[in-house]
Length: 427
Image (cartoon, rainbow, N blue to C red; front, side, top):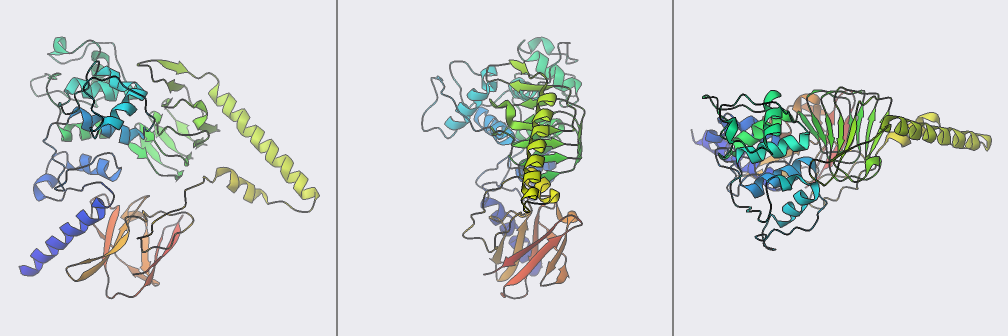
């Protein structure tokens, strides 16, 4: 019995230690893990959208404040650009001041605030759903089926109707929506995960099949031979050519939350509509002939590349066609800076190097691996050429651990059919 208690404590400390270092608190209490919304909250924690409290809990039954909600929205979409605000009650020392200025820049905050923001006030159900619906551009002019629809503010009705028709929100058992009631943290997580199937927040080439809407909030994301049965929402305040969609099928539309319409490059992909979402509330600018323009741009690049290749070949030099293709599709990633990490940097990493580490917990040494892409089922693992079996720390299989036998440096490798990466682990 004593041994089991020690292991339970070690595991709890291990999880808290890993996620504290990433400023995302991971709840491990038995009570919270049994909550109906726990898996929804866990998914948002892993995507750096949701954050917990200082005691390590997520508190799914707590009402969400207005400041917490807009902070979550900004994390989810990767919004960073700010603008000044004139809210009378916004103190310069308020932790959420930057979040409010970001929300103001994107326009969505105007749905719920006029003269005052009231950041510590609990957000209502209709306010939260309206913001989510606005950013999804999911609205419906028809009446809802909620019996208390007459109490829903007119400005919020189209969004509540839209999300209800899409089955992203449900009412209560008595048929009501309770628009002025407060929304709980677990309920917010559930709605977000129903309306957003996947969030791409790391650079890389993705060949996914996704049923639902997706968000891209990182530069260097390439969707290649992908199938997206929903809308693509590009946030992140990204620069030109930051996102590429190549040889993919997208059944929905693309929405750009950016002042830069050149953020997206299309190759052999048909998009029915691409919209630029301006900072002015509910204003949409349709981008005409975007596919044609980007295709021409792509062809122009190919012609220049081909011309340069011929010129180089005539001089007896130049790169092969394989090299040129690689240079066109490879995205530049920042050089990892992890002075306290035990890992030797590699060119392209599928590991979160800042959070991957060796930990000594009550005399037992663990190698803790945090994956950037995929999960435990996607890779095979070896240490110094010997196959090992790693244990899950979180249920999604993105945080793993392995008990080490000694304190000697070792070479760790993870690989699948598309990827091989070696890490030199030192102490």
